[in-house]
Length: 86
Image: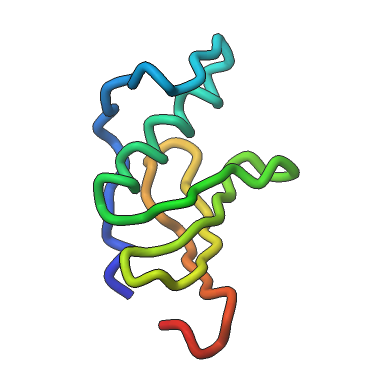
């Protein structure tokens, strides 16, 4: 799994259409999502029940759910939603 090695430490620029919030966890996840988007992921969204979980699509269009480490910013776990995606 290539995605497991992506480090999400470098904050990206806040774009005009991004939601700016004072919640540090929300800002952290915005930075994570910007870095993942730059790596080819798209349609990313935070799964609200667990703020360190994201869902979206990888660069190949496979639907994924991932767990982001709360301090290192690395992908801890990457799961493909469909068994045939990988």
